[in-house]
Each structure stands twice: as structure tokens, then as C-alpha cells.
Image: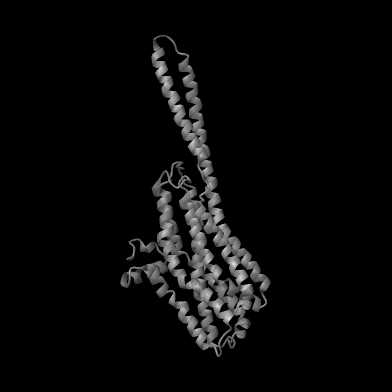
Length: 358
């Protein structure tokens, strides 16, 4: 894929991958892994080469798992930026009374994602690097010879790149939640006959779950994080952090879907009230026509039939609105959500038994 016309609205990783793909091969996901993904790979090779002896196999395994995040992360960010979020904007535009208002919201949050990432990424990266630097004692147990050792500096570079990539992922999750809230405030029309069976709300569910799955990639780093925490004497704090992380994954999906559900519920209830009022009014008019007599009786009878047909149409419409599912959930979305939540639990248990398995 060549560089998009609106690339000025894309985050720098996306722009770079598009630029590399335009000059090499037309496979941005592959290009993202083979360009930005090589950074942690090269730094890891350098780190292991600088160690005086072979590090423990459990550390190597946990480190390689963690490095899978910055390896595939840039490509995942590119895909979220160019496909997932863009698809959400276009699909929800069809639900809005003013589709251009949705596109303006999408444009605004594309700019937020591309231009304001440092507000989150910088402190997050500093935190991650700081935590590892404070745990230099654990690194010494695997062969690093103190803070003056070049291997220590290289490892901090690895962690810094890890913090940048994961920080952008978290920034994308926050951006998605804010965008969903902004779209929810617009005038929307729930379509009970929408092919998704969810009144057209599936776009919200898919943005939320794909963003949640992006965050859940961080689970791959949990074995390494637990090694640092337990080896450095911060085991309780690390387990607490794991619990918070699982909660963040759940909230990143639940909050926007519950918010949209409440907004959609209000829209449907208002529509049901309007339809109910129309039915009551037509019933009254039909009853009055039924009492008509004289020369106007034949015309009154035809009008009464027309109104009763309209009442039946409105009843069908009422039932369609009343029966539409307003939670943007499908079986596929629920399965992805459960897998995203269970993934960090799995890797936490995996780390606990890693030493016994290797």
C-alpha cells in the first residue's frame, strides 16, 4: 500500500511504514515487522553478546516472549490506525443523522492519536525504564556487571523501545474510548433491520474488542515483569500490577460498550414513545371515523381502514425497535474478549511454573 493521501493525520509509525512499503514491497504489516521489529531483535542480540556467560534459559524465554510485543507492535499499530479506526468511523457514519459529524469526530481523534502521543508515551516509557533500572540487582543475577556495564545500557535501550511501542498502544486504547464517547453524543439512528442484528452498533463493539486485543499483547511481557518484580523483591507490587492490567483490559472494552448501550437505549426508548403516541392518536381517529354516518360513511370507512393499516405498520415498527439488541456484542466479540482477559492470567501462571518446566 502506498502512502495514504491523509497520512498527515497518521502517527509517525504509520507514516514510516507506509513510506517503507512504498519504496520496497506492498505489504505494510510485513514491512512493519522487518523494519521497526528488527530494533528489539538487534538490541537483544547485542545484549546477549555482551554478557560474559550464557544467561538462564528461563530469562531468555521470558525475554523473547516480551520482545514479540515490539516486534509485531508497530505493524499492529499501523493496522489499527489505517483500518480498524477508519472502519469504525465509516460504519458509524451510517448511524448518524449527520454522517459528516461522525467524520469530523474521526478526523479530530486521528489527530489526537497522531499528534499527542507523547503526553502518554513519555511518562509511561520513563516509568518502565525506571522500574528496570531500579531492578539492576536482578540483571546482575543473569550476568550484567552493574550499571557501568555496556550490557546494562543496551538493556535500557531495549526497555525504552518497548515502552514507546506499548505506550502508543495504550494511547490508542484511550483514543478509542474518547472517540466512542464523542460519537455517542451525536444524534444517532438505531436501525432495527441492520444486517448485523445489533441495530448497526457492531462497529462500536469491533473497535472496542480490537483495541482491547491490542492492549492484551502486553500479556507476553508478564513472565519477564514477574521475574524482575520477584527477583528484585517487589513481588506483591507486581502481582497487584497484573491485577490492575487485567482490569484495564476489561474496562477498555466494557466501558465504551456500556456507554453506547445506554445512549442507544435512550434513543430507542424515545423512538418507542413517539411510535406509541402515533398509535394512540390513530386509534382515536379511527374510532371517530367508525362512528361516522350519512353520505360521508363510505369515505369514512376507507379512511378508517387506511388508519388501521397504518396502526399495524407502526406496531410492527414498534416491535422491531423493542426487539433489537442494544449491546454491541456478538459471539465472536465475546470470545475475543474472554481470550484477551484470560491471556494475562495464562502468562502469569506460565511464569510461576516456567522455572520448573525449563
